[in-house]
Length: 376
Image (tube, rainbow, N blue to C red; front, side):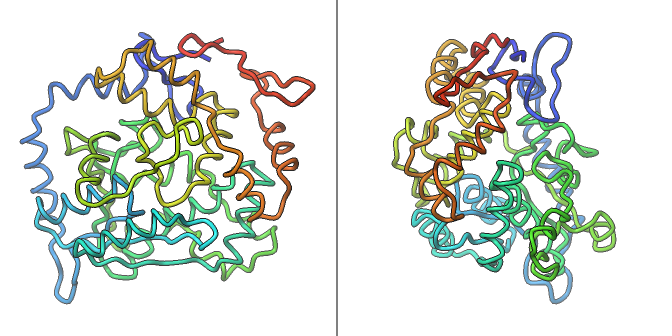
């Protein structure tokens, strides 16, 4: 395990690699932003939009996937108020046991801001079955739900006959998931190859006993469907020079976004602005930490280090203290939902702990072998 010499990105992040100079792709990309002509990029976007004219009978210019969070709220406002487009917002709703009141209120806020929002909700019984199966099989409860989340947007685009899908950040350039890179910095049609979606066979879902018909919401449209209907995903983050966790949070909060109020020690959410529509993401980030050696705090501080609002030393302190943060209450509510005990939860988590990066003592306590910022 090695760390980027500039930020705290480890080379254990799936689908990433460091250059010979020991710098991660996200830091390399950020350094280049200082030479970007943002007016030129805005003109590129204007020219690009001209290639997607609204056809006769088409009511919307584009589709944006939203959760009601900071990124989707900022995108919706910028697309409507700056670009003058009429977007259709697509929201995949969580079941009542999972969705937070904060998430419900933030979607309501988008509706009150004047947007058209289509809310879809996969069958709750299938959702719960697949969530349990995802956790028991992969120790990743979001394996199935993320398929539904990412699939809902292009599925809706096909249904409404809208060719243009506007997405937020480019995971390849801004996070380092290099398999998502397309022909240009804004081409998002390789999003299907990101770590979340890659290898997205539905066989394991069928093996869990779910009827194939009930798996329709979890099927990401094939490349042939994209080509046949001319679907194009465009990363808006490539055109916005001030795209960041903090900036998007501030823009959205100024327009009515409700942020998370729980403590960093309970959530690992340094600013309370990430994944606001539900709270079980907290335990999934903790599990990700035990698998790969980084969690949600790492992503926060990396961006702040690049923006020179944190030093690398300050980032190391925060990552060391909070990267595996998860309050027991979130774990207990998740276990109650999928019908397992908290003890069984930890049995599965410990089985998935990366033995190269962590030790587990006889009492079950998990401890780092690596030193944050240094590695092994």
